[in-house]
Image (cartoon, rainbow, N blue to C red; front, side, top):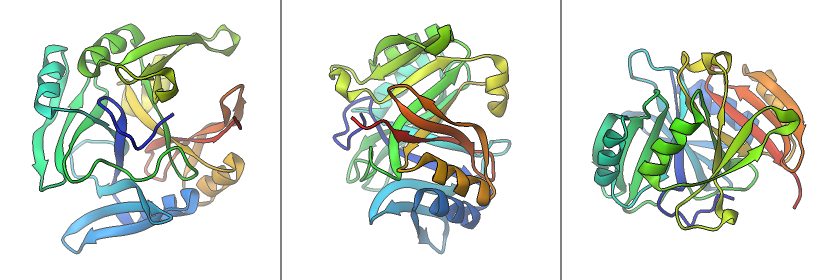
Length: 263
């Protein structure tokens, strides 16, 4: 499970980049019950809150050719050391480590196959205030064409621990991710090797997406469909996991809705 006791290599923050900030704020408010808090008149973006607690960020997409997408940030002890590990592993530094005032130090990367992710070295802010609760992040997931290569790269960068479980119906292997030195109860995500068609959303490159907990997956999916989004898969029941659906917002940024199995 994800907690706000962030340790090295655990997800701690996420934001979505879109071309239309007000429209995205309205969409996620309807689907996840989020309130949007603008940063100010000079910034096209702000924070999402649930019951007053920060759950995610929202910003205007400015990078030429970039697709609307969620970016997941992982806590690190030293962003500069992580940058060196990314480069040594064949990854690309998209945004070099930089200080965001007193709040912390961030950097953004691509893995060797193009999957994008980010890191956060905490200062005054450790990350989001609410996780593993309705309307908040409860899991992270990587779709990739090379599971073995991804394990090597991210294992070297973050020190992650991996364990494999068979997919239902002999449909392959799902790899579970746990921060270095943590018990399995602190699993925070998974990676799955998929075919080229499943990566078409990102032009054939791997991509991370967030999984958000919701009290009623079907009701949340109805809000997705009713507010300009689309559903790629589901809702379906996954044994031992819960009821889930893979969705796109109105700009085709992908995310998963999950009503976890009780217990």
